[in-house]
Length: 128
Image (cartoon, rainbow, N blue to C red; front, side):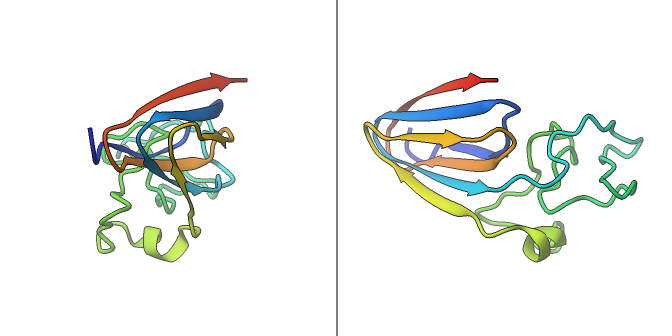
């Protein structure tokens, strides 16, 4: 359906997103230096970052009950009080509009947010 959203996340494998019907907008953010590290959650449900603290990174993945590869931030309407690092530390995203017949290569660990702009059908292929 129109306006279907895949929230900000990354995939652990390389990804080819192929648009078959309709249009989608994809926002891509480069990986940070610890996306997908096998760090364990601490008792507060937050992940330790590379500095050994539990201060969330710009994407706040692995917090607020989210999986390690999924952001807690609604990037289309971010709460900058709740997630100040998103405003201060997030890289500028690349924007891509996909139409029928288009394909987008998304390297592993690249953060991406996808919104369908109309009724659409896509296919993904992941590989190592």
